[in-house]
Image (cartoon, rainbow, N blue to C red; front, side, top):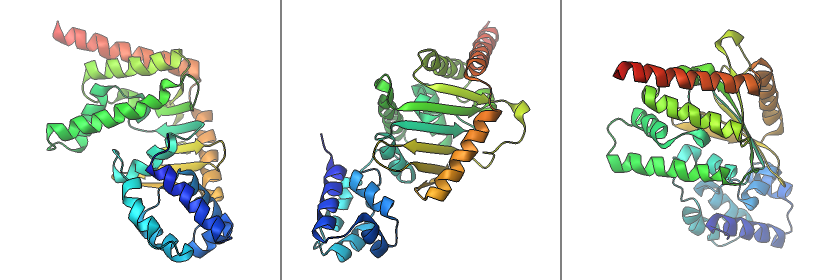
Length: 273
C-alpha cells in the first residue's frame, strides 16, 4: 500500500512531466542532481520543507508540496536518520560498517535499550520504550528470507565493549551469530590486529536499489548525511571493499563472535556464583 511519501513522489513525477522537464532539467532548476529528483519521485529521499518550496516555485504547483511534505515526512526515527531508514526499506542490498556498536538491524531489545539510555540518560521511560519499539519495528525488514541482502562488517571493539553488561552482550552476540548461521546476514569482523584500515573515520552504510542509483550514508553524534554523488558513493564503495579485505572471513568471524558471547556468559555465571 502506498504511503503519503509515495503519493507525493508520484505527484512530483506527474508535475515534472506536465512541465515537460526531464529529471536532469528539473534538478538544474533546484541545484541538485537528476538522480536526486529521481529519488524524491521514488520515495527513497524525503522532500524537506525548503525543497518543497523550491518545487512549488519551479513547477507552479500552488503550494502542493509545502502542504503535503509535513505529513509525508513523519517518522518514528530521529530526524538525522529518518531519510536513511526509509531508503533501507527499498534497498535490495545493504552493506554497512559499524566501529563501536552492533548494527541497529541486528540489535536485541535489551541491547538497544542500553544504547538509548546511554544516549539519553535522563529521558522518561516512555521515550526510551518508543525508541526501542521503533528499532524493533525497523528490524522487520529482515522478515523476508532473502531481501535485502545484508552485509555487516563490525569492528572487534563492537564485540568487546560490554554495552548493557555481560548478560546483555552474551544475548546480543548470540543473536548476531544465529542470524549469520541462518544465512540471513553476512557478518565479518575487523580484528584489532588489522591495525589501520580504510574506514577509521567512522560508520558507513551503502544501499543499492533495483531502479535507482546507490546511496551512501555516514553519521556522527546526532547528525547524518545521505549522499548520491557518484564520485562520493564510488569512493565509499572502495573504502568498504578495502575494509572487507582486512576483515576476518565470515567463518572466522562467526567463530570469534560465538567465542566472545560464551566468554560473556561464563563471566556472568562466575560473577553470580
